[in-house]
Length: 82
Image (cartoon, rainbow, N blue to C red; front, side, top):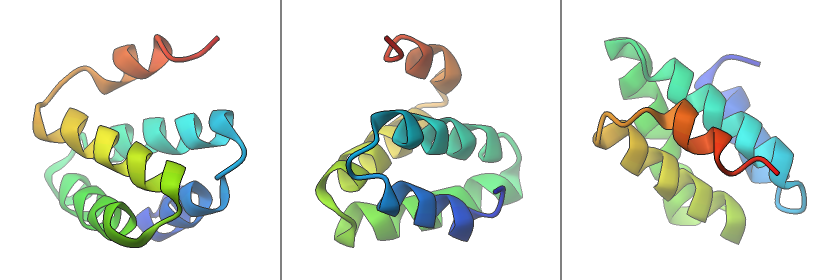
């Protein structure tokens, strides 16, 4: 799973599975490391952020913020893993 659509589907299906949401979030952060990937990731995350399931929306907004802020998203997400 490495296309934005596949990642978006995974994130949307993972309402009850926090680890899958974190994996999808990390994959979006990795995808956004290139300009083309960033554009694709942001577009997919915006769609989820507007109309996805509750936890998917929250995750999409978090990851969008990490990407927009050019933060070390992977390091941040590592802190969320128990």
